[in-house]
Length: 136
Image (cartoon, rainbow, N blue to C red; front, side):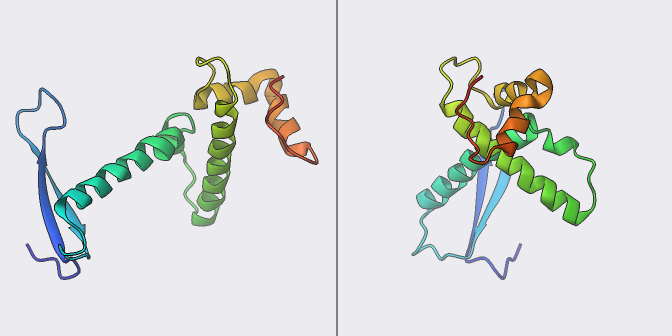
């Protein structure tokens, strides 16, 4: 298998589930030569990718239900994407201020914004100086 754009191709065999009978084969490609990026550094980059995936993307897919979006027009999808990411950013700040760990989740943020017919969310966007610190 030839990859003209890749300086390194790494085959990674891993067991994803304990009951999996055969390892999963994954290929990692990079344009950096081995002298600039060692195998250990490449694995660290791969693991860092999953930190992003488990952080933002999991929130977008789970609480934001992004995978269930029926928007198909590129421009509309882009605008909706920006609003979802803005909501996740506000949610992260709101979560950091919660004293109750059961409430300190992305879903807890969305539930709090839906309470009283989304009055808290409307107050947030209508204020001259928006703040989410008002927990009422």
